[in-house]
Length: 271
Image (cartoon, rainbow, N blue to C red):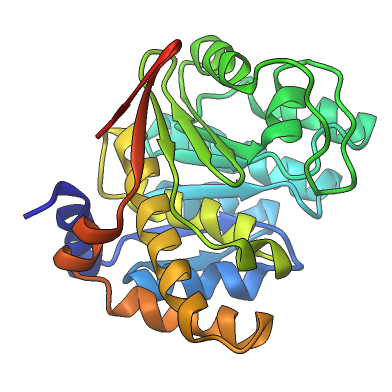
């Protein structure tokens, strides 16, 4: 049995609790994607309870898409509680690079231990302290090598860094893997990036190799998107069918459709 499918089966069996403090625009999508994979989502944002909720979760997902000071305080409380109990935390650096406020707050959050930092190319570059042009929450131009930026950030933060895009880059600072699955239709609906962070959090909840968890989550999510694209009539039906296709993922479909590439900086090997 493929190891990716083994992790998926474990999620379906144990239904891990994934605590979110997330983007209000996509909160329902994030909850539903976790549920489709077999996890148990909870969206608790109040600073008065986030530390308590995080301490009983199997993973915590923090998404700064609609941040404000009370939300940041809630995230810090969740981070402290999660760190105390060695619970993995995924941070989705939504919109970093767009405003000074976001740039400052991501730095504050990353003073705590995290398992995964995820974002598009300009968000990850900005998180790493490199000046970029970011169009709101959409990716902007990054002039430097994003692979090197991701590797350096992963080493500095001692975590996994995921750069999403046409091809996703996943690195722990030593290994670098590209996930080449997905559908162009994913860029036509709001929320696929946020959902990807929730999926990664769900896989980290049951798999302690966080690099492999991120890769496995993205492969499953993006294979489902590829399958949904084949029969969708447009963005609306595509989004709905992603959830349907997730529930029918099998060992055979994952093995047949996964597209991974190992990067050795100057050399690429199919895996």
